Image (cartoon, rainbow, N blue to C red; front, side, top):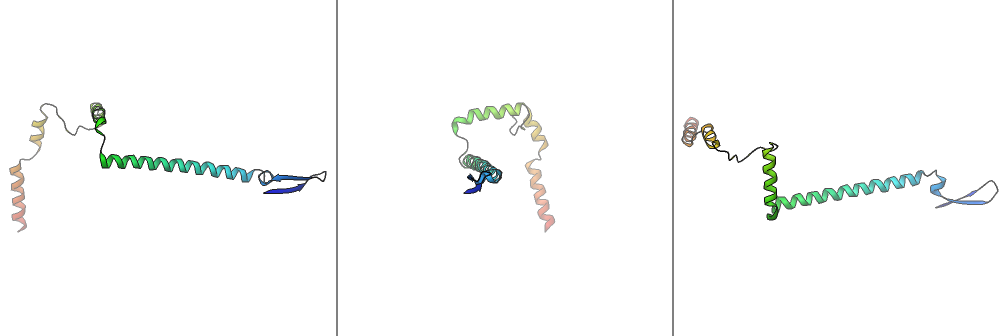
Length: 118
Protein backbone atom coordinates (compact mmCIF):
# COMPACT_ATOMS: atom_id res chain seq x y z
CA UNK A 1 0.00 0.00 0.00
CA UNK A 2 2.87 2.40 0.52
CA UNK A 3 5.19 3.55 -2.22
CA UNK A 4 8.72 4.51 -1.40
CA UNK A 5 10.05 7.55 -3.19
CA UNK A 6 13.29 9.39 -2.92
CA UNK A 7 12.92 13.16 -2.84
CA UNK A 8 15.46 15.75 -4.04
CA UNK A 9 17.41 15.64 -0.81
CA UNK A 10 17.84 11.90 -1.03
CA UNK A 11 15.51 11.13 1.84
CA UNK A 12 13.03 8.35 1.54
CA UNK A 13 9.48 9.69 1.25
CA UNK A 14 6.72 7.20 1.94
CA UNK A 15 3.30 8.06 0.61
CA UNK A 16 0.15 6.04 0.20
CA UNK A 17 -0.90 4.96 -3.27
CA UNK A 18 -3.88 7.30 -3.25
CA UNK A 19 -1.51 10.24 -2.95
CA UNK A 20 0.86 8.96 -5.63
CA UNK A 21 -1.81 8.32 -8.24
CA UNK A 22 -3.17 11.89 -8.04
CA UNK A 23 -6.13 10.86 -5.96
CA UNK A 24 -7.72 8.95 -8.83
CA UNK A 25 -8.03 5.68 -6.92
CA UNK A 26 -9.53 7.49 -3.95
CA UNK A 27 -12.00 9.28 -6.22
CA UNK A 28 -13.07 5.98 -7.78
CA UNK A 29 -13.41 4.36 -4.38
CA UNK A 30 -15.54 7.21 -3.01
CA UNK A 31 -17.67 7.26 -6.16
CA UNK A 32 -18.20 3.52 -5.89
CA UNK A 33 -19.23 3.78 -2.25
CA UNK A 34 -21.70 6.57 -3.03
CA UNK A 35 -23.23 4.69 -5.96
CA UNK A 36 -23.48 1.47 -3.96
CA UNK A 37 -25.11 3.32 -1.05
CA UNK A 38 -27.68 4.93 -3.36
CA UNK A 39 -28.47 1.59 -4.98
CA UNK A 40 -28.97 -0.03 -1.58
CA UNK A 41 -31.30 2.81 -0.49
CA UNK A 42 -33.33 2.61 -3.70
CA UNK A 43 -33.54 -1.17 -3.47
CA UNK A 44 -34.71 -1.09 0.15
CA UNK A 45 -37.30 1.58 -0.69
CA UNK A 46 -38.68 -0.51 -3.55
CA UNK A 47 -38.82 -3.56 -1.30
CA UNK A 48 -40.68 -1.62 1.40
CA UNK A 49 -43.20 -0.21 -1.10
CA UNK A 50 -43.82 -3.64 -2.64
CA UNK A 51 -44.31 -5.13 0.83
CA UNK A 52 -46.89 -2.47 1.73
CA UNK A 53 -48.74 -2.93 -1.56
CA UNK A 54 -48.78 -6.70 -1.08
CA UNK A 55 -50.09 -6.32 2.45
CA UNK A 56 -52.95 -4.07 1.36
CA UNK A 57 -53.79 -6.31 -1.60
CA UNK A 58 -54.00 -9.40 0.61
CA UNK A 59 -55.51 -7.93 3.79
CA UNK A 60 -57.25 -4.76 2.64
CA UNK A 61 -57.20 -1.41 4.38
CA UNK A 62 -57.46 -1.65 8.20
CA UNK A 63 -60.95 -0.79 9.51
CA UNK A 64 -59.77 2.19 11.52
CA UNK A 65 -58.83 3.96 8.25
CA UNK A 66 -62.11 3.23 6.38
CA UNK A 67 -63.88 6.48 7.36
CA UNK A 68 -60.87 8.62 6.46
CA UNK A 69 -60.38 6.82 3.16
CA UNK A 70 -64.05 7.07 2.22
CA UNK A 71 -64.05 10.81 2.96
CA UNK A 72 -60.93 11.27 0.84
CA UNK A 73 -62.41 9.34 -2.10
CA UNK A 74 -65.67 11.30 -1.87
CA UNK A 75 -63.71 14.55 -1.93
CA UNK A 76 -61.85 13.41 -5.05
CA UNK A 77 -65.17 12.49 -6.66
CA UNK A 78 -66.64 15.91 -5.81
CA UNK A 79 -63.65 17.57 -7.46
CA UNK A 80 -64.17 15.18 -10.41
CA UNK A 81 -60.66 13.73 -10.16
CA UNK A 82 -62.27 10.28 -9.84
CA UNK A 83 -65.42 9.09 -11.65
CA UNK A 84 -68.49 8.26 -9.61
CA UNK A 85 -68.93 4.51 -9.83
CA UNK A 86 -72.03 4.38 -7.63
CA UNK A 87 -73.86 7.56 -8.53
CA UNK A 88 -76.57 8.04 -5.90
CA UNK A 89 -78.05 11.28 -7.20
CA UNK A 90 -81.88 11.40 -7.49
CA UNK A 91 -83.20 10.50 -10.92
CA UNK A 92 -80.08 8.64 -11.95
CA UNK A 93 -81.90 5.29 -11.74
CA UNK A 94 -84.40 6.39 -14.42
CA UNK A 95 -81.68 7.35 -16.90
CA UNK A 96 -79.74 4.16 -16.27
CA UNK A 97 -82.82 1.98 -16.75
CA UNK A 98 -83.74 3.68 -20.00
CA UNK A 99 -80.25 3.17 -21.43
CA UNK A 100 -80.02 -0.50 -20.51
CA UNK A 101 -81.93 -3.12 -22.52
CA UNK A 102 -84.65 -5.07 -20.75
CA UNK A 103 -83.97 -8.61 -19.63
CA UNK A 104 -86.67 -10.00 -21.93
CA UNK A 105 -84.97 -8.34 -24.92
CA UNK A 106 -81.67 -10.00 -24.01
CA UNK A 107 -83.35 -13.40 -23.77
CA UNK A 108 -84.92 -12.93 -27.19
CA UNK A 109 -81.55 -12.03 -28.69
CA UNK A 110 -80.00 -15.08 -27.06
CA UNK A 111 -82.75 -17.34 -28.40
CA UNK A 112 -82.36 -15.83 -31.88
CA UNK A 113 -78.62 -16.49 -31.86
CA UNK A 114 -79.15 -20.08 -30.79
CA UNK A 115 -81.71 -20.67 -33.56
CA UNK A 116 -79.48 -18.96 -36.11
CA UNK A 117 -76.51 -21.12 -35.13
CA UNK A 118 -78.52 -24.36 -35.64
